[in-house]
Length: 301
Image (cartoon, rainbow, N blue to C red):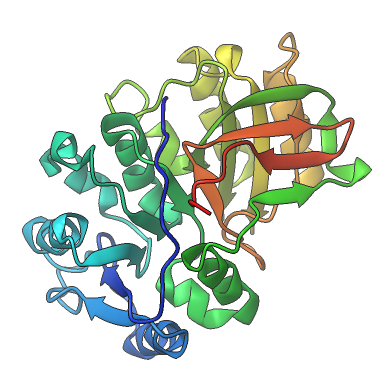
């Protein structure tokens, strides 16, 4: 995993594309999120197919792919914000010409089902992408919107202080961050779209999963030889899942025998905060200094 992209912060008038690669969404939440971007001074460019519907998908695969590729290839577009997760992004992976994207990385933001695209862009195109609020989630909470806007403007420090309670296992390690939604990530095991986990910091979060289902996913990671080679684990929010303490105990059981650091309670995922973190970028996790911080900021100063 070698992601060395350097982005320029957006200026007033910069074009931000809005795409819907997964599930349908509510029009009022879309408009509220779009207005937040307009209020920040950005030109909003909505994909022409975003209001299409095909059952649980925001249009056919071809319609969703068309909007995504137009945003990815249009030189006038500087950032892409996904409108909603849900389901459907993974259906597009085999149709994306990743090789043609390698030399022109763009700011790409989203989470949940968008994990499929994060992992694909990192593993196949070498991009640094940004795990953070989708447009509809941004419209729900002002602080989520601010985290996203800070990234677009190049103001985000990509660093977090840790409390003693967040340290499940101590250690100090440097490595690239990859991951996102655990349910989505495990679906890519055995495919070309999972980034190399060796020495990496695995970020995982999930929503509405029972303990045994989370256990099954962690078992999958272990049996697929992902867990043994990691440099560390970053646990985000497990919203509406099992008791946090039970989740942490289960994860510690699965990594028994490995000596990498593990921290929990990070503000990433489906919960209240959902701040933005750069995927594919190298971070320092140091539980002794109680910090998680990026080593090479993705934005040029």
